[in-house]
Image (tube, rainbow, N blue to C red; front, side, top):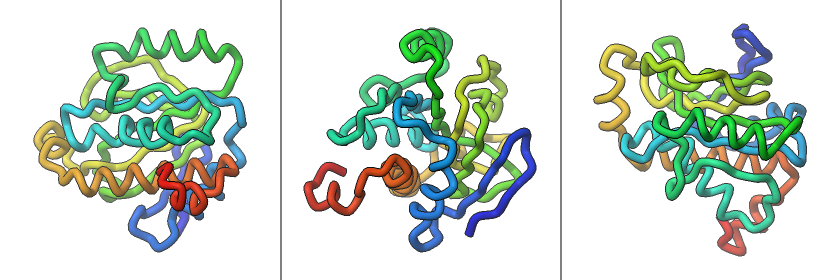
Length: 191
């Protein structure tokens, strides 16, 4: 079920293992989304847990019905090596448009599999002691580890199936919230 939390923005938390959670997430994120917004998916496929963002980006970019620009896929990830340039590129190509940011998250306070929707951007890299510019107007993050002390081992030792499942939930939720009929796309084998 959805629970409200007091972060620095309106925030909703969902357990990705709740039945039909993609409908709940879609309902929560829909008021924040704009049809012409850009979607920026951050992460690297070098660590399984950090592949959440690029997996979501890949699922979304493979959807022929989605008209939004999607940045960050398994083929072209947005990582610590290129994030500053990509932030500039996304902002320049989408001048004045809303940006949805999707990323993995490390948190002692939340459970692995929790998906967080906020009406605010994020500062990527904070969980791994890196400082990058704040980006986005809306964010969707997924907790991939509770181990802030040994985060590198915890995100590389995750099961790919777990991250893949969480990315599918996030993708379904976004497609539903953007008014795209997920079951029709599934029948057509688009997602």
